[in-house]
Length: 248
Length: 222
Image 1 (cartoon, each protein chain N blue to C red):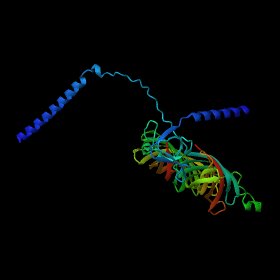
Image 2: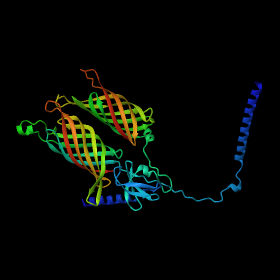
Image 3: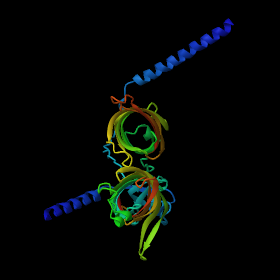
Image 4: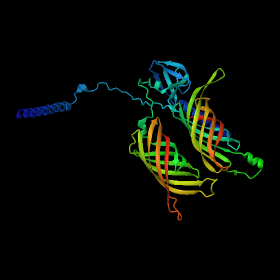
């Protein structure tokens, strides 16, 4: 037990050392002054004004705010717009890597949530996708639909074609397959849960909002292979969904 | 007519000839061998420094645990435990996902009548998940004693999800408000009040239930 604790403590210490030795980025103020706030937001008060020529160290970032340390060891938060008016040690204008609409055209990973209507039931979905080619991505979706008479959980794997990835409002077409497990409401009937395979076609569009943020609207047409020997028709379900996602 | 044609033809010919000549001259100049005096006298020995711009640590994610009380309509006030994760989109907005669980107690009817229980012990367990959008409405500072000031924010939050209770999954809307107290830059203490609205049809007719939740939690930013 004692050894484990010692190992843990030493690991913590070493990770601390490693963290401490990590170099921070330093910039020099080029504007007449910049304002330091007590917190990462415009609602927090300005407590310090730092003059032109002073070197500041960038410690960390939260949304569009940067925590900085001045040469007199005071720490505060600076807005990105003010920070872009500073210079690097070599005298160049500070460049902060920003996620922009140009990155939306070439993103790799996308993760998001959506909600809507699945054949009259309210549905919520979690989806994650990987773009393996400029115009093609693979996507996994987990959904839960909650209706008046039954609820269902489904898992879907699909391929999405993005014909115009460079557009701000980019349309896509989807083909997918998966399985859905339907449970009738406990208060209604005591029938067992059913699991069926399904296939779907879909159409939708996703639009870049800001930073890593994307909104998406989609329509899917499902064919659930529920036909049996007594009931020979497959079930067709229409689904409308709207949601948002983050890309990386 | 013929005169004008000839002029144009000659003009074109002249233009082509001039450009050809120009080309030849440049080629000839370029072909001239390097003379000794154009050689570099001093060969600078500059070691190029590899400049790597240190990356800035971004802390937009927040994860943590919370615990408190959930009042389930007709089924008592019960201790609740959960986990939450949030991503801060801007200084104003954040998205949050939460999962929590509690075990409900007997209804007053079950206790007073001593009759058969309405739910099995499995059905008595309540768990929910939700996805919400939050808005930091009142960012500010909390002054603890005369020497210490801490950042804080009051936020409004609303979202949708699902609650599993009494053998069914129920679509649930949640709305409420919370207080985020930043003990350090990376550690936050949360106090939340949330109403979870879902439909219940356990007692025959369908009714919307309001289930108030009071929680305290801690999250870390990374």
